[in-house]
Image: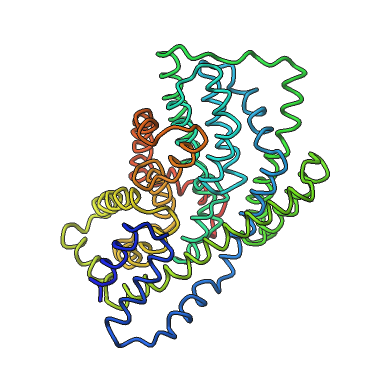
Length: 427
């Protein structure tokens, strides 16, 4: 049955079938081939997978991010970031990176962050004579910070599978997200110096105050989310609902850009994205359940442990596996499929689940920049009207520093666990 599962999935994907349908059909094909399964299990497993209070956070965070974007928050975040870093050499690239870090704390999605920042910044970067491939590469690379700095949709899914504290995962993502942002800024500055890219004029006091006043409202939302969780006022799921209310009030009554038409569009897009993610969660759970039924987690654990029982070596092997997987699969389906398989191994060698969860999200974030399935690349390609090849030529220095941060957080766990241990000592 395992052969049918993997070959069926590979064939469906090669022929262009969406990942969710490929997983579902491959699972059904494997069950039919085996002959010992009642197909009613398919519906039962799909319902069980979605019947989770933690997963309710996904539609809330999706809607909150869409409301903030539809309410004009992207432009205001860019103006806010421009006050702080626009005056540095290569200023617009710096603004794109800092803006992505801020927008990440609103959206929780790499695709949403790339699309929001790219639509605002790539056109003016081209006007300022930045190379188009470089402009798209910077925005795509910065967009991967979206699921690392909380709120993070992949972390919600990981937490729901492993039982790890979603709040601790959120807090653990801050330092890695900031490290990636700073590393990308160093690369952007070096390239800007070499190529002579311009910097923006220093904002005068009036412009700076106006941008700060507008942008500060965007910074309040992550404070509400994380602050509420840390103070025990609400759960991560409930914080998503609070964020939706806040985003609606800001967009409708303060920025006054959420018209009836805009709200309809936001609701429609959020519904579509949530449906896609939840359907993926449902069908991937069938695939993962079949792998477990065939003892794949035990076999994989025995294979890794036969090579080494050292957690550092095992983390290296898992990182290599995830880097390869990330080139073919997006973050969410990869987490749903791989985590149940790896969980027994992680527990066997004593790897901290909070540490590994953040490492995994960062690792798979790198995959969003690598063909053939580099989602952030495709988004940046569509906005910049460039081919993937032209963007990939410019993105290698950014991939290298992101890989460096990945190695740092893998082998210095305190970069992830330090903040949760201080702010959430009880998990």
